[in-house]
Length: 149
Image (cartoon, rainbow, N blue to C red):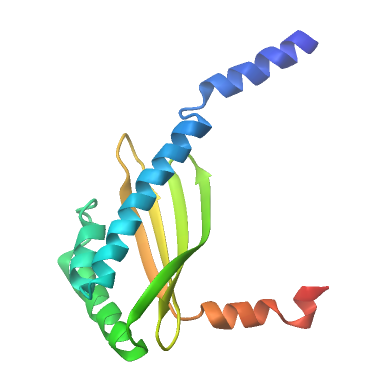
């Protein structure tokens, strides 16, 4: 029985597509993409940053990316100059779907950028990108007494 259990464990481990080291390397590659995005964003070119980010996935329409460019460009003007970014979290549901969240610092208020990447075969694609300004409100909500208990 013990040998059967050991065999099953080893079988499950050997069936994994990616080792933890390879997954970490791939996450590092994705963070490189995100850092290049922020380099372009820091230079003041939200349009170039969006174009770069969405270049890995042709399924997004030019209307979708243009709408995002308009919203992000308008928000950036209203909240002041970009002053930096910090990772909030990194999560994965599997070896093929990874989520990154960043606090994006501006002079007047922070934004949160969420990046989700999907690997359908052998190459990562941008799956989702969202930004919002509700990170402060969520932090305040998390501090409510009924969450503290």
